[in-house]
Amino acid sequence: MMMATPRLRSSWISLICHAGLGIAVMVTVAAILCEALATEAYHIPSGSMAPALRGHHRKCACPRCGQEIVVGRAADDRYATGDARYYRNAFCPNCGLSPIPIADVRESRGDQVLVNRMAYRLRSPSRWEIVVFRLFGTFYIKRILGLPGEVIEIRDGDLYVNGSLCRKSFVEARRMRILMFDQAKVPQNIGWRDRWEARGSVSADGAMVSLDGRRSAAMLTYRNFLLDERKCEPIRDEYAHNAGLRGDSECVHDFWVETEIEVSAGSGTLALRLCDGHDWVDVTLPIGTREKITTSASTVKSSSAVRTLERSERRVTLEPSRRYLVEVAFVDRRLSVAIDGEVLLSADLPEAKNSAGVARPFQVHADGVAATLHGLRLYRDVHYSQHGKNAVRGASVRLGSDQYFMLGDNSPQSEDSRFWPDDGCVPFSELIGPVTSVRGK
View 1 (cartoon, rainbow, N blue to C red):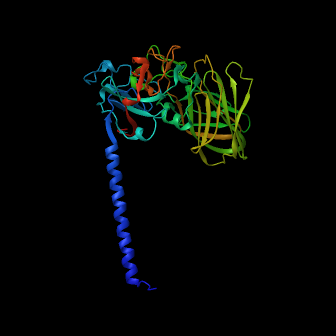
View 2: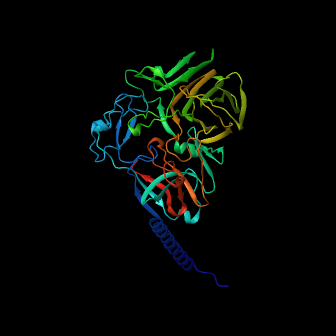
View 3: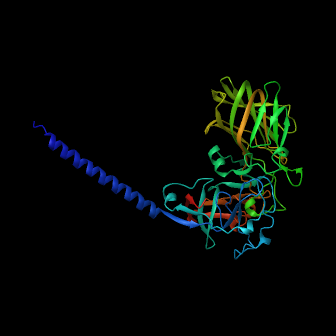
């Protein structure tokens, strides 16, 4: 058998490398062409999907706390004049300052989205994804809530499918959450003192929340205190994007807290609590010792009757002098806990009826430890209002074998399946595709 010489082997290697490079280039070009043919761009003119997608809008920083404020074009401002009378009720969703001089800001175009027109030839549409479709000779962009064959109903802001509460996953809930409060955006000359009720050695007036529970337990309770009106009220489905609060707004119940926790000293527990108007849920984090995360619940009416929920599968600890990103969500009666982006446990609570309005959605409790919470943010879930006629006020909609039910995230200002004829059902044949990316944020 003849052996190839070094020069011959080099030639073959060079030929293979060039051929491989050519194939790689061809595959890349083919992928780019396929993407270009499969996707189509659409412009978002209205704010029915705000804050996930922005239509024509004006944007500025709150003069008092610095929070970004985005206000959509008013329905009456048909020619984008920016006349102040259309925006006189604009407010800051963080500190509540009103009016905001948003009319003085130049209007920006709405977002542009890319839609995959080939997706539904390869797979079925999924619940909670944003989709573009045609209806009545018009293009719409909404979120899919109801799937073929299901019975759909909206109760107390939540989706019910075939009579049962439909719960979002942790990732799905994160995509839809709406920022309500940012501790780092401190109002000038006022601070956050009135937003917190304190017990023990605590501090919450600046950009950080600190508790020292080493000698005796310390607790802070967040409350929806209106800084200018000087009163505490339940949290409602208000959208800064709509430049005002509707008179028929509804109380919301699903909340999410996110913060970086740094323990400075001690060995004990740090508990984060959320309330949805029916139950308080507790998440107890071990400090200094490696233990399982424990969760429990108690009703608002009977706080002494505590029942144990889930424990994390593995043991964890929050070590001193390190920061941990901790997220606790109580959305769709599902309690979820994540540390540094990893979901460690999830527990579903039974469906609840007649939940009260929530003015105090969050508490933090330190026992035996001193801890600081950096960048604390409080969010709420999308709340679907009872406006319209389909699947609301006790009515339900049964979808056909190829029909979908679509709703906008900005429920008070969304024309969607709640209002449309034929029970709001959208045929599969009218679906163009899901949104794959957004430009203009």
